[in-house]
Length: 463
Ligand code: F0G
Image (tube, rainbow, N blue to C red):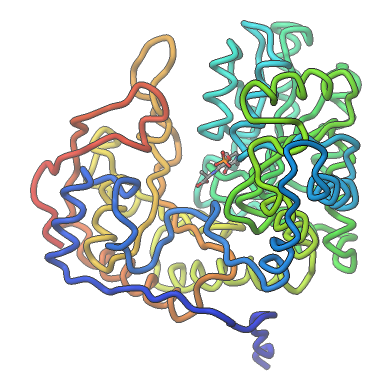
């Protein structure tokens, strides 16, 4: 028998109109945006799947907590409420708020990395790697090989390959490593989780080597959901408890609250390390603000504290991840090439297989994201060769194994009918895929180029 439908555990109290455009309007808009979906105006977008970052719909509780915001410059009540929520939900001792995740990465990298040291990560993330490199560090990829195969159905493609870590220690010594940076639901791998069993082993190994583990906890709750669903022994364990266990294996974290924490702006770093905490407070006043607000308004900290409590409700997180799955399943059923299994925050189209007639240097993911926008006004994001940037030494393109277009689902924002529209548009493009032509880059910023790079068509996009 077909399982019973489970609806969203919320109802809609406020709506925001969105506008459908004509194909001509969209062709003009994408040309003016240099074929870069980051440079589109949101007014021209029908369904915005650029990112799940800061695009969340807040709850009535979060909005009402904002009225309690204490806007004192120092020692605000709202800070202490955020600190208490972080300690309860994540379990770390010390909190330093920041305006968003990359500010926490900046502070962590500046304090923890000595020039020339390695920072192993389970695949890179753009801003995290940029901050590691700015601090003189070297990114070292320690994710398992399965993560780079979009067709592998391995349930924990975010796992760390300890043999790769051991190899680095054997060749360079443990002192050459600043810390391990471990991300749950690895964004660039397709939102893929690690298992608790893997984390336990990594933690034991790191202790032996005397290396701290710093999580990029941005999508930890989504990872906890996959552990609950896929890993033996966790089926009946509440998400709250799984998160505490996970964070317990680390020494601290950086966090972009714009994802899991259900707010539109915010972030933090958290730590159990007293000496690091002192240094982080010294740096945060230079770059963000007093350590009791770190670039956030009192009301932001209130919304964040409430968001942390809502994100660990089992019904909420199940509904969030299931919506992503709902879109992914439709595309798989229609035979479209997507990263499998479907990730926690997004469905990733495999642009190499979608557009096999384009070489990687013709920017297949960038091309496909532009074509999707022209077809239906759906905005997605390139996660391929443009995002990967250039090698800091050779200055050649980094050509990543995964060439993807990310359809990122904002939290609590769209209905499953919106997902149907997205699926239909992807299918229409796939049917006419041989008519999609590549792009050439005509403007390239030096750092994080994907945000602002501009392109021109090799030949007209004629889908
Ligand atoms: N770490 C991960 C895994 C992220 O996905 C992001 C942001 C950050 C750190 C940086 O946080 O934006 O608050 O400064 N990811 C966004 C995205 C931009 O669309 O995936 P931030």
